[in-house]
Amino acid sequence: MIGQDSIQTEKKTCPHLGQEFQPFVQPQLDDPYSFFQRAREEEPIFHSPILNGYVLTRYEDILNVLKDPTKFSSADNLKPIALLMQFGEHKQSFMLVGFLPLSRL
Image 1 (cartoon, rainbow, N blue to C red):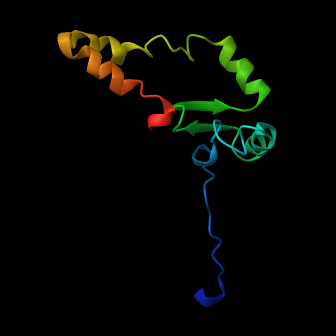
Image 2 (cartoon, one colour):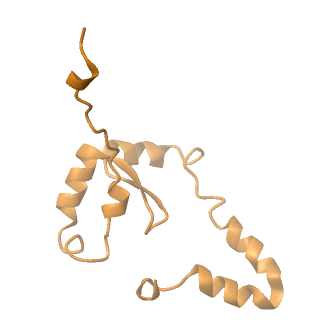
């Protein structure tokens, strides 16, 4: 019988390349290729908080998405903005909050 002390627990981690994905700053700005190579190997599809969307890094995955526009559609992507447009005189301030330049974030 194996005692509990002899069992080694391996720390399992889930890769979160989305947190490391910084496409608009150095060093990824100058050399995005090494990051994307790592992403294809470790986490080929990840969510990017900066882009507020998913990043696909494998050619086959990208083709599959492009071939199925019904399943992978951005048709309702602007629906929240359309709802904000109903706020009349306040719509300008809502629009400004939604589209702050990256330099102001």
